[in-house]
Image 1 (cartoon, one colour):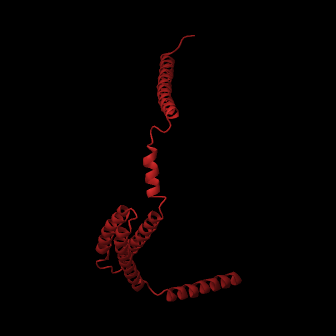
Image 2: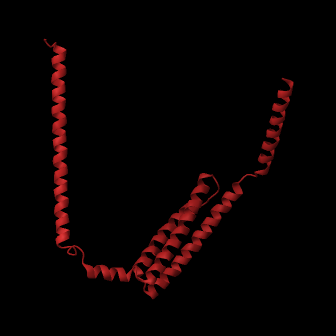
Image 3: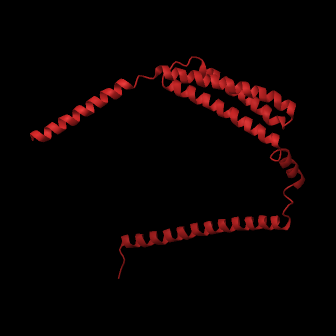
Amino acid sequence: MTLTQAEHVAVVLAVASLLGVSVWIGLVVARLRRRWRRRQTLLQRVVQRPLAFIPVSRVSESVTSTVGSPSWWAVQRDRHSMWRSVAAARRAVSVAARADAPVGDLPVLTRQLQRAANGVDAALRASGGERRLTRDATADRVRIERAASDIHAAAMASLGAMRPDVQPVVSAISVEVTALAAGIQAARFTA
């Protein structure tokens, strides 16, 4: 049994591909071993000294001054309310602009409102629940929400002015569907 040149080439390619696959598998296994060893080492450190990585006193102070404080929760609620109104205004202006409704300077005013809201948000976050600072920032937040509401109402009014009357189209469709159904019915009886 003699092998032809093509068979020799096929055997050499098969051996080379098997060798390449085995080298690749070896590299993957070595990488997985290294990762496993790193994780085991880190796990051993954490098990030996579980609280060495976390300064407990700082965490507890931070938690009680934020999440444990009712004023912190009130500030978060106010921030969420402000951003919800700003986002609604921005969305309404964007939709009105895409619908080619007259929006005037509303896009520019919306961007300015967003910058002002960023400043008020920073002041609310920095207040730390202190009543005097929170009171000033809350007054600004209320003004931001009113302005956002005004922008939203203006964009919606602009869209409302652009909206075509729906009733004539619905009536024309109803008449056409009825006429088409009658025509199909008449065609069945004549055929």
